[in-house]
Image (cartoon, rainbow, N blue to C red; front, top):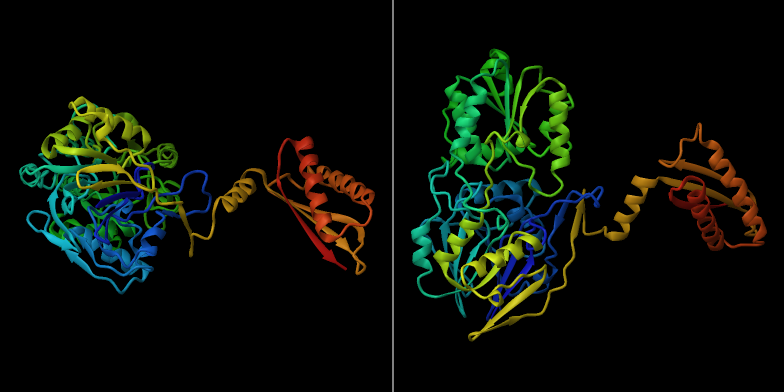
Length: 547
């Protein structure tokens, strides 16, 4: 019996983590993080709920990784705190993982690096043969996996670009050869299932950037996601053609560029790249900055530059800023729009997504890319992954378009599974899951209640009411009230004073109340009172003081 579990990664685009189980053994494909939404104030990261893995860690034989984006590798430092198993990854991904482990202080680990073009390896009873696919980061792979029920294909992200920037195209012939003997199922990328046609090649982006940069009179800035090595290569090529030196701005982008250069995935001569110490030796029209933080994240290099708060980089009027990044990830458009508005307001010539200048191409294939994969693999069953509900639905429609019945498609939500057993297929039990929230050093120690409190504090403010009781436990004097984020205590002080007077009357009318009752009555009265007076509902925090 083979069981496939979509532990996460099917309804929220990120947090990719998939489990294969057979013969008392377990293997994980990818282990990524998610990112907080607008209802998660103070949260840094979202982890998939891998408690099922920890509970069954004696069965776990290894983790195989398909590519180096955070939504595929970001949770590895966390899961390795609870389970110790070897990892398999392509060369560039291996370096990204090692660097991540260094940042998180993970020391006890083993990474097996495989060649995507011809290697095969064993993880427990699973035999795996990787093949190269095209995506927005080098060394992205799909897997042909031999299981007890037959061969399956797992292709988390792909497009059929046969002219990629790095020259390493989708391995169509290798994947076709691997698929020639009846594939049981295909689990594959559905994120582009709504986009007609094939996704275009990235090659024209370089010429489009060159047309902008060659007319620039002062400094030029460019940004892309920090793991988009191919885009960095294009930016460096453009800089070289117009005689500009390149400087990397931002720790993440600098480190990833260095790792890619060491593996010969990013090509440049030593004299093309300069450091901040050397900037003073060149005029602004001789420099091109590659900057981290393409989505305008608070605290990122781009955010600080746009705010005039970066300690080493400033932008000036007539400087050029190129955004080669589409705000596709959830909740990124607002932040990216914010920094773009700030840059434009400073007189910077900004080239970005709304202008449709051909500066960005998705790493996810469109409808024809997806159907081409269907034609290569020809599986019996289909499992859409890496998207959300609407993309899974569209993926199912594409399966129907090639003449396959919709009953052959399994759209799985988080924790749902499919069982393949001697030719039979059925839905399996659902593994209970929840989002594990990371904030600072805390992992999983906050939930909906805490987030609800934070939302109230952020939107409505807080009112602290200090109530005094004597040694005999009786209510003494008048309460004292302080508000933060609710009303301005200068001009609106009377609102608070009236609330104290009215609360005092209510408490006096109740007779002798113990500490618990005093808190309950205060909250009950003030919630109604403030909503009636202001139309708002601040958090009420009573404090009982014994005097």
